[in-house]
Length: 105
Image (spheres, rainbow, N blue to C red):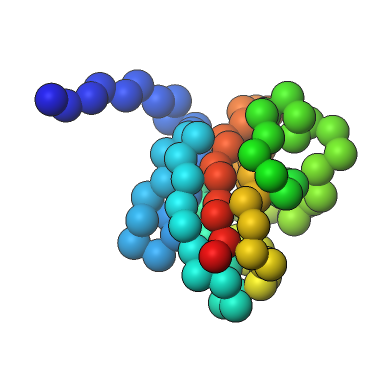
């Protein structure tokens, strides 16, 4: 059976390599590499925040570490993360939160 998912035109498109990540998706990544995501926010500027562990969007609104200030589409470098689980939120200029979970092995 298929799924129908309706999204906003301004919802970010986020890719890890060839893998397209949807809102609240997760991806497993090998440790020891520089982790890069490709972000397309349909021309809107965005910022990104990260926190260790699995967090809700509400928990990410304060206290999370900023990866970038507002920027435009392009590559988002997370650097080399230690093994663990991380929550990343991409926040566009309309204040729409796009959460993804990364597990680094």
